[in-house]
Length: 374
Ligand SMILES: *Cc1c(COP(=O)(O)O)cnc(C)c1O
Image (cartoon, rainbow, N blue to C red; front, top):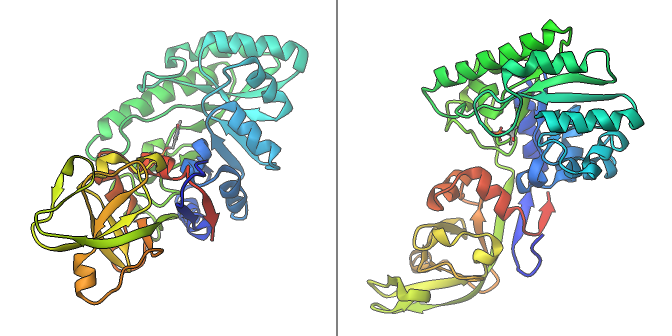
């Protein structure tokens, strides 16, 4: 958590809950993905909010993040998507009751060895259907099942991840992964293991019928973004709402005369007499330097463009128009880096586009600043 700055991240838990409920209307079992501190929205806070809407499983990343959620008092099923890495992780599967997908032979052997001391354990199995990151190959499913048959380590879930579910026109690639996943499920079924089939992410669960299966993993949609830029949202019975807003204070306001340049490198020169506000945010606060001369903020309900380079803890915005209309901008005013009042709040999609990234990264980075819940 970054604590050396004046940023405030406001999380609207009611909007998160609204987004979750929208997905439960189109899917029977929605697993909120709250890895990486709930994409910067807060692991424990988000989990407790969604429990009120009936979420019965939460997906996180590494096993120790799952253990943290368990030890914070969460009593639901917790799925650690990334699998056990250390001996401590493996022990935690029993002591903290963590479900995790096992993705390769050496890992499986370690879990089997540990089960001799610790007793029975339910596990998941991860299959690599095309991402080429983690997982058994679908054709290994029969062999894995044969090894587990009759033992005290039982597969209860099979999972895989889609590479191109959020790209329009890539139905064939998605279908190929769904077919490979089905082959893995068939391999397990051949040995008598009928497991919870879990393939779709947000995009998959919204638009790809062949990926719905028993449960879906809801990440970015939960935080209010449509990974399909509108094509996904139209399948939902309502609008997704943004859950994160971020503000920083104005520090000083002054003129920038025609011909004067501003900030490191003098990359912006005023073409006419202007007024600038210096806002107390920079790249040390995970506000990307890529936003230099590209991004915008919201001040007094209006968009204001960034002038010159984003510095470590300061960024200048042009407030000429605002002040020309008699709106006073003063030190201490709040500038919105994300969200904001007025007709044109900064959307996560805006921030991602200006910074050459995706909404996921914008959330994870800005969410590392001090949060408050409303
Ligand atoms: C992060 C993640 C998700 C969530 O994806 P979204 O696109 O955010 O819905 C689902 N599954 C796995 C394995 C993930 O790592």
